[in-house]
Image 1 (spheres, protein in one colour):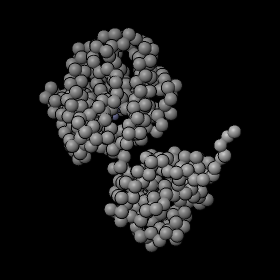
Image 2 (cartoon, helix red, strand yellow):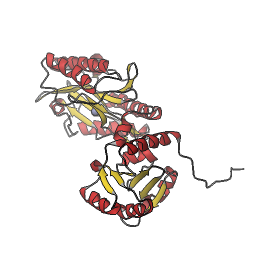
Image 3 (tube, rainbow, N blue to C red):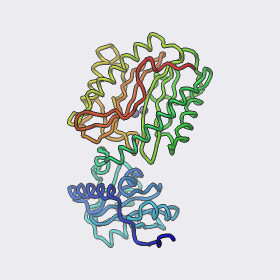
Length: 374
Ligand code: ZN
Ligand code: ZN
């Protein structure tokens, strides 16, 4: 005997209710009567919807999901707590209807996630309400992860790490960068990833002097240094890791680079704690690398926030103005790049805690462990 199927609307889960409450408090601060959320990851964050068309509209008491007919079933399944509006024409037409019903005064939208054309249409649609570029409400909310998000990020890290270990055992001399990247992505998906967090970087030798090299046809040889920057997406959440492995031997120049970057990373991680300004973490790595002669060779920031997007707040940059708070998840990834020779970057994922931090990733960074047989 099965339970009777009930058609009552499912109650909104606690974690979404809590996010909407915080979102509405910020809307009230900005005197917004409605907030049009067009970034897909923000729609997932606030409503649970993963479809790729439409907008979520948050008002003081309601939650609308404007999407199209391809997502009718998905909207009902993923976000039954939102009032689904299946649009026949553009999003603007539906916003216009909602405006007639609710008589909004100020409508916030995400300028960084809307085209100039969309903004023009929406502006007309909500008139006489004013369409205004909202402060980054969801981006700020997302900086601090709730416990369920940290669990999801841990899973994304586990999958990436397990795939990396297997891939390292299968790397053979003569394989191309692209073959290694494909193997790594395959191993991640086999373990439950919906895909890589971003296009996997596998760069052999001097190709690694480009921090965002694309894997190509360069082949692995004995003595190669291989920079691998990869991550898995699991249940929407992402991991982001970098290791440099050496095939059979480590050339002296790489040995020195590695030891220096490793120490820079250790110092930066030691600086991570709630209450610390993000730029101080960057400074810990940068000032050390400068002191050993790699100042100009460290060409990017020390890290970034990580979650539903692979790059989100806070930024651990020279001018990173955020203050770290417990619950933030950041990468720490100093690197040095020498044109014609190669690059070394070591990247781990770190949870900021009240008393310091917890390194969520578990792969060894010891130089001796970075040698593979090939
Ligand atoms: Zn990375
Ligand atoms: Zn990164």
